[in-house]
Amino acid sequence: MATVVRDLCQGCGICIQICPRGAVKLSGAVAVIDADMCDDCEECVFACPNGAISG
Ligand code: SF4
Ligand code: SF4
Image (cartoon, rainbow, N blue to C red; front, side, top):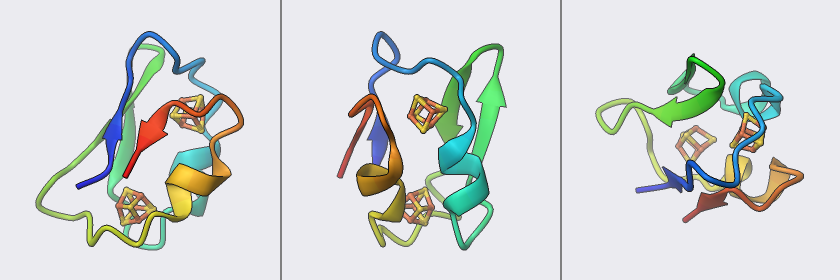
């Protein structure tokens, strides 16, 4: 599953907008991926400008 590297996330929200499954939410200023909703398409991995999501 795609996971967010908390130290790299800037909370920009791009991954939230791009996720086709609505699996990403912000918790404070850090993105969090819901494992039950994520299908590992990795769109967020490529979209994150900070390289904060690993697939
Ligand atoms: S796109 Fe990257 S930096 Fe922006 S909220 Fe998502 S994980 Fe964080
Ligand atoms: S891998 Fe795909 S489904 Fe999972 S959080 Fe990223 S964009 Fe959403």
